[in-house]
Length: 260
Ligand code: COA
Image 1 (cartoon, helix red, strand yellow):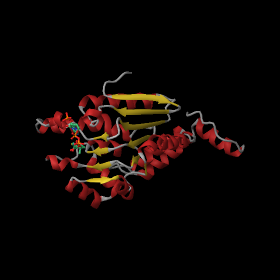
Image 2: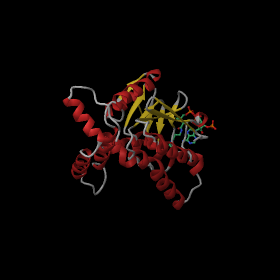
Image 3: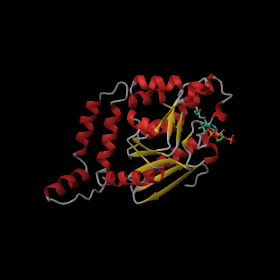
Image 4: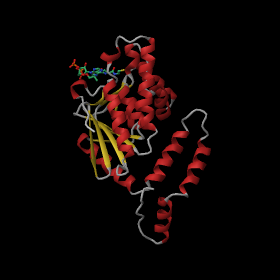
């Protein structure tokens, strides 16, 4: 599939999706959100893709937010619709993919940009990255899940402060907050993501998909995460990956998972 606002490249088990509107600091307009949905869907459906990395093009920004120009004249219904559609198409969609998604935060991750990074399964940042939810400075609130995912990741008090001040934190502060897992120089960002991806790829993709489901259940209203874990744990016993993983251990060899 070819895209206007993003690039999607597959190599060695990894699909790298790059948001490619550098002149607008990769701001997320509607068309980009739809293209991202399609690219994530395509990568997740491709059995060869074991890990997805998402990043921004250029050296300045991951994503500087939702496209302010596009929603500046919206009314109440259009505003609510924008948030609902975006959450369904992209943010919830990414969070619930069975393929691991790593955000390579290579610069500004603001508003919808930080919300996209927070929808990913974990985040790695370059040292120049700056993160924040500046929506209250525009007279609006985060609408792509930011009020929910930021407190999950950094705790309620820090999330309240970040949202109320509309301020930015740098990469090292984000590391201290637990918002990102690692900070490296920009040129080392994709290599580190790929190194971690290659460790992930050695394990059962089927088991990893079930683990994502169980971990996410902890953050879903009305779901008993322990029950989800029990169900997903049980389902593993009917997979070829489980047969291979346990047999390989008993035969003292490395597992070669079929991913089924
Ligand atoms: N929506 C639409 N356009 C955006 C954008 C956004 N969220 N963020 C940046 N851009 C555009 C700018 O309008 C500018 O376009 P122009 O050259 O056509 O005028 C271009 O990207 C470059 O941005 P600029 O502001 O000139 O860069 P800067 O280095 O001076 O500042 C930021 C960088 C990130 C601090 C600044 O762009 C900014 O504050 N962006 C908005 C962040 C935000 O509030 N996001 C939440 C949205 S809900």
